[in-house]
Image (tube, rainbow, N blue to C red; front, side, top):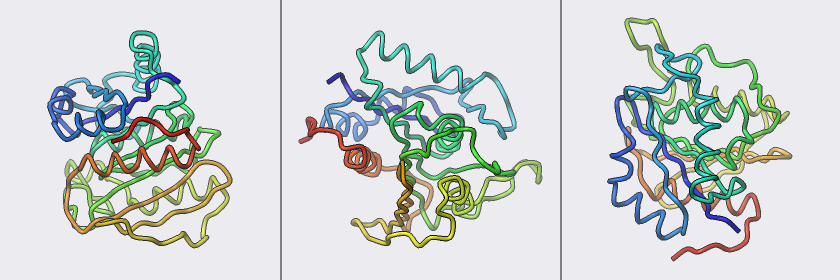
Length: 230
């Protein structure tokens, strides 16, 4: 089995180097026995479909990133997870919507679709998606907010989930409710994939432990064999 990898996308005007310098991220990757790859947006921004700027074809770019990681570092394409914070989470949602099979799973933190939300996704697969969000987040509130003097609007997180629930044919079904530490979670059970929303009472933040948990949940959902974890 090749080396698994967690790909991480920074927030607005951030950079990949700060992700690499984050000691908690590095420790998480070491403990899980995976590579940690911090991808960088052009000029600190991500060009998702409804973004104010479109600096590159992100879908094609990420296909190249994955191919490069596989070729140069022996990354196992069957054990990859894309995570992102804030603007990086927006990009994570849209990459899953374009083709959920691009990565093995997705772990966005504090960011979903923007308005207008897609009626449906082009992806033929339902993603393995584990979303974390703070109920006191004022930068990317659960219900979204207007930006740029009303020119753009972040989407509602629950309505973003509805896009996938409709596509999976389980709209209106009741999720399983459970708690894990500080997280209050809802889990839906599509025939394929996984859809999970975990909320904490804090604001606009990201923790390595949330990404670690998503990787472990992804492994359970995809029935991966036991991997190095300490």
